[in-house]
Image (cartoon, rainbow, N blue to C red; front, side, top):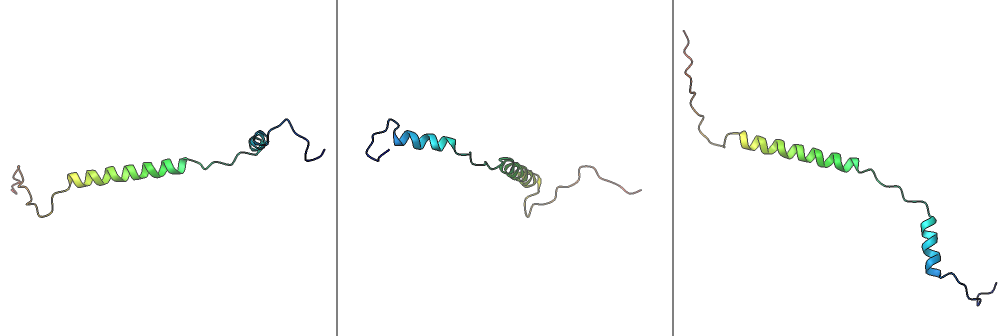
Length: 71
């Protein structure tokens, strides 16, 4: 077969078919990313809780409502 002989198959279609026949690339596991996001979410919620429940810097300690008497 010579190079000047016209072919029925288009070169673009042949390249596409060869691309489909290649072995698929291995995918990275998404569990590592999901675990990292979950850890960041838990840490940020813990920090937000600590900031909301901690007394303000320089705040005066509240007086006890119930007086404890030593008898």
